[in-house]
Length: 158
Image 1 (tube, rainbow, N blue to C red):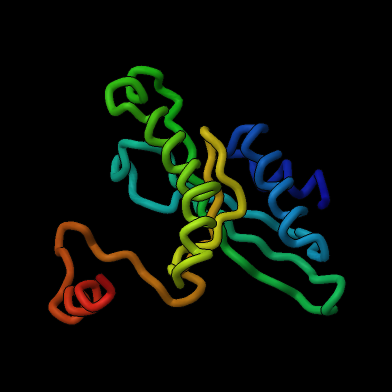
Image 2: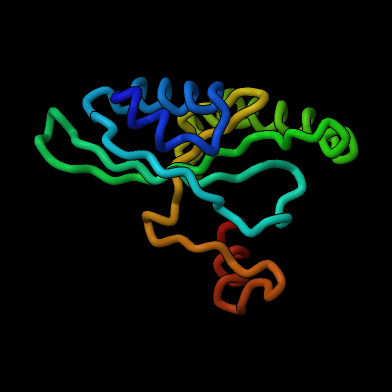
């Protein structure tokens, strides 16, 4: 990875988060050279009290395939405010979510075809997932709820 490009583009995130992203990309996509990485808010301000949700747009080049690549990731991190983390028990929630992605889900997927966003890294302070928006999925406006068609789909999957 080009350290200068990474440092320039990841200005908005902490050095430890930048390192986690870089390590995950190298581990999961060793043939990809990252040329550009743009960090932006994934949700509206104050929409998630449990953490900071960041969208990472990545442009690069796959050296094995000889072609340009684009991908998006979602990075979930804890809020900086210790008071906020304590009020909402964020530390425990992150530990549980990281354990789910790193231990529980892989075990469940051995026995059932469960559809979850691929997780590139799950640790107690950071979770890095593939952004399903690049596959056409869009989040529902939570104040509107689900329409009948989507409710039926949910019930069929249960």
